[in-house]
Length: 357
Image 1 (cartoon, one colour):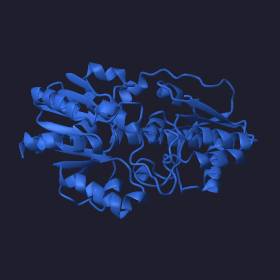
Image 2 (spheres, rainbow, N blue to C red):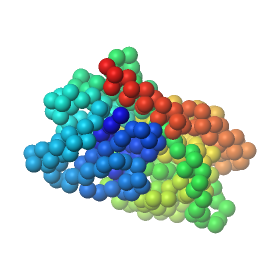
Image 3 (tube, one colour):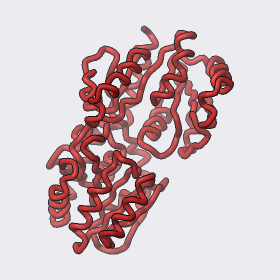
Image 4 (cartoon, rainbow, N blue to C red):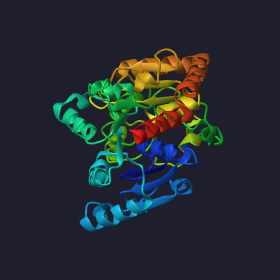
């Protein structure tokens, strides 16, 4: 079977890493072509796992000349399935899939916040569902929020986590002191609630705890200004890193916060925390409760609930056996329900099913 995958970019984001895992672990008999609608590639190992790769400069991706050349290259590869990883990719390749009668998958339901309930959002997703053969969400919550959980064209496939690769990474110390170390991994975008995290850190500024923020983005400067305003000395900005798994293994607690209106689907950051046996504190929006079981492998909190987050951190700081127990439970959940093998099996089922229809 031949499959063409299309994505807007290949950076370090969760969506991009999931595509990388999928391509890397699909059976060898599957021939894979990857089209990236950008000339910037951060995950360089992808070159070792595709039969053909095409990059298009972002500013030229909608030009007629670029599209004609792109269609020619895809026609030569002759895929059975076009797997579009985001909405622009669906639109770009819909004429091709229609004209050459190729199956097309829409794989861009990767969030589940209340904003998805807005009429425009629902209509937009239903439009993409109507022009493709299958739509995939990475969480049950994503389908329920759009009210399409029973639609014949939709399914969910939880993100898979590459435990073998993760376990091969050696821990990389971030600090030699004995303070409790808490990390939040995520881009500085509106979907990540770093503002609440700063308020939490301010409440705990005098305790033996340090917060490390891993990621970058347009909101970082604003958060840095707030840290200076509160005169906090317990927050460190790490920036973008390509060794995140090595860093995570040296923390004591993992945290991920989202504002009320913007929720996760299935968070790669939370899966990394759980794989590293960290207890998790996370906002109970979206698909996060599919990963984090309250009082089992961590604590689920309401959006912007500073008091609740502070109390959860205090409890974990004071109770090392609880941190260990929750960490072990989190690792079990990853092993049993979020393995790469599970994800590959379910995607292979979909590819076989729609290619035979």
